[in-house]
View: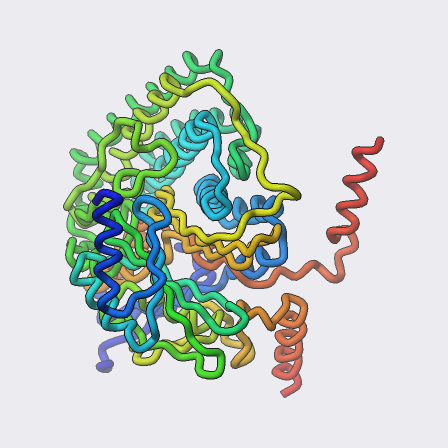
Length: 161
Length: 393
């Protein structure tokens, strides 16, 4: 796809509620959609050939969480962002549409605490079984020092029992 | 689960696994019914650590994500930071990055071929391949001073130049590897010992592979054309002439063929780089006080094991606001599970080794203990003090 075709494709997504779409360079686009529209947009993109999911990034933007879906049609990469409010950290799971997303959603749930609703197996993946519930390392409010203290404390408590 | 079925836990510490990782195999007799992977045993907290270190310090962290693909991680890291901050790098630096990356691919693929031969019990081939791999390792040591962690890319270019007086000798070394690999391909595709242990083992078809978003040689052996050097060229790959290796075997034999053929293509790239590398600077300085302009970039690199992404968000400071790394093994785990299902227990080691897993890449981020009781460990202040004294001498 040429630069013009990629821009044209990006513009055509506007009807589905995709905003802030911009083409940074050839093969790399960034866009934003809402939590309600996410599944609809991902399904549409899948039908348009974006069948490969590279990964899912969770970013703590201080005011909210941004979940970034890095989708590709093997050439063109579209980085689709979704804002998630901090008081309701949940997002619909896209594993049903793109099965390759299964581990990435579990990783996001472990490290940023944004729960994938409707995931077939949202169990812990990366964090230790002994790690305290509800402590998510990548959240900005947790400094490395405080994480270390909390984790040590949880282990001490467990040893006391 | 019927009463004929058993669950066998393998790992995190197990003789068949070179790195700590845990798998729960549900088996019925000799057949594997289901597999549940559990990762995280090598989680070092790298993404979190990167948020409190500056861009130059992070250069060394990203390199240490993995020992085998250290250069791929650095290439992706520098690429993403340069794109986010709008830093242009000299043409010669791009060629040098490609050169080191392809040497790294050579040593990694040859390492894998040796390991695969060992897993199917063909140790003679393992010795031969690893002997030839030493040529590449010595070459990397000659260029960078190190056998692994070459510390070549830096933000704005590369750290060391290539000396063109060495090129004729290097051409001969690359020719040797090319000839030897051609011989190994002949063995792999005709020797009955290999064929019996490779054909049909760990099979996964193209549509399943696409569905599970596999990457790298693991996906290309199932017929998915996904080499990022071809589909989304970065650095100078679009100016180099090489084949997009895709086979549709889908089994262990396919894995062997894809990697062996890619060794040949990497040899071609190395020779072209030596022939066409332009003269000039190897590094540009970036930003005042090492600050990177506001921006974001998702940078994709074809590492030896597949698609590697580094996604960086810069808020204009000298430290990244967020840096995300996804190593190829993570992408290949869902397809690995499918490859193992329906196979025999005896085939688990080779199928596992087939995706060339690297769990230290996959797990990146937990906490390192600074060694509270160890009196010899230095913190950053002590290191800085030592550095200051050293340079003032």
